Image 1: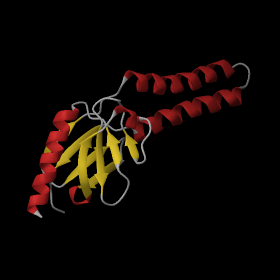
Image 2: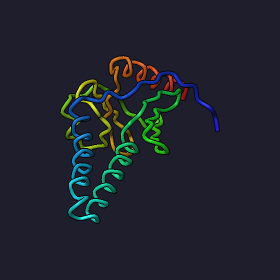
Image 3: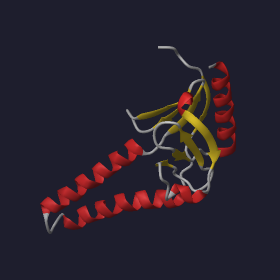
Length: 152
């Protein structure tokens, strides 16, 4: 397999509202588990199990890094999950409005309402992401896209 050179890397931007929601879900199930310890041991164990499952699920599906290579965009989720989007399958990458972080017809990996980038693909669902430095990310992505198209 041909190795690609990493051109740019950015971390996702996590808004406070998302951290509160995720932390609230974990806190609620954990507190319910503590409350049930003396009343219903099985329910308490179930709530602790749900807390652990939710924490592992959040770790697995929330984006960790966005990497731009010569031929693709790589979205690193929790180990071992990775989404590779080859530039040959990308129609365009453009800034998007913040409400697409909540309601969007494609895949949503946006963790913030700021710096939303929409990636429209030829095949497959379009997606939105929210890199920490959206303008720089979009500039680097469009530059890599144009260079990849000129090579082919």
